[in-house]
Image (cartoon, rainbow, N blue to C red; front, side, top):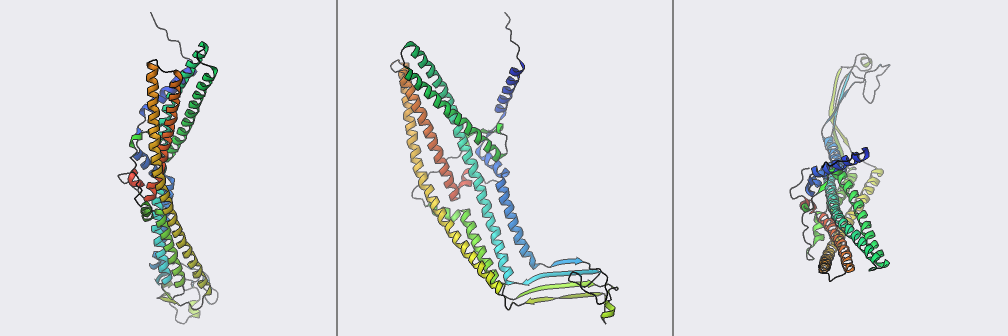
Length: 440
């Protein structure tokens, strides 16, 4: 006997081919550990690149002020036609070659501005660290939440199949006169709720998978999670003073403190702008013979040079005094902002610590309730197998176990979210997520 396979139409063949490609892509997709996802995100992150550019800009600003103490040499020419006494062109006498060198020798204001720029440069490094922690936090929470939705989706697919079987069984029992229409509506409601939860889980998982793809730069189809690679979160104890630890390690506080110190330096520099200053200056010029120099200068020579120092002593400058007072106000504002950020970090860290303790206890309660519901489901299934239980008892046990599972998942992720935020607040997030420091 020969088995004849019916020919496949074009659409069916295309659908089969697409399904085969999808399965092959899933098979070839390598698991993505959390550590690798974080390293890819740090290398691919636009916020980290922006923060690094800010560091480079602050360093360049510091070098700009520092290099004022090195001679700045300019070479040019001021050729031109003269009628009568040779007049200046662009601030210098007409010359074939003109070379000027200038630099700062002693300037109290410039020194304070240089210190302020150096402090701002180091402050930008703390901002870079804060952006790194933000990227790590985003990846960790996205990874953990996606793992939660994927696990829930697998559970809901099983629950949906069981709910459909239950609905079919109640429909058959309704035709036999065993169950009522109310029982059938209850079975349909259970199946509809499971389907709603499955659609919600699928949509949330797709959004998070795309976001993780954006963070890491990997194609969506190649992302295969490995939830077991998420490190165990360290416990939180009520006796530990995490607020003090957060104050000592917070990049936001250090950034605000450095900015306050830089503003104080600028205010001091504005005051010292009223002090005397000394600059070095040198100039060489080779003058031409066709600009009437020999007619107006008795001892004309083509090669001329000048070297010396320019001393400036401010005697009366009310506008500079007003500028210094405004800088003092800015320094006071920055100092108060640093104090406010310090208090805010301490308060938020304490809130996170207490919330983590509460959520840890709530997670344990949800876990025990789920275990009890699962035990009740197993007992109901045992009674069904022994033909001593009813179908509706099994359905109620399944619904309760499914609800407790969802509640336990929500409580567990909420604890993870708060605990990760607390790790970032205390400066331990990168150490926890990346035991080996990531290359910068």
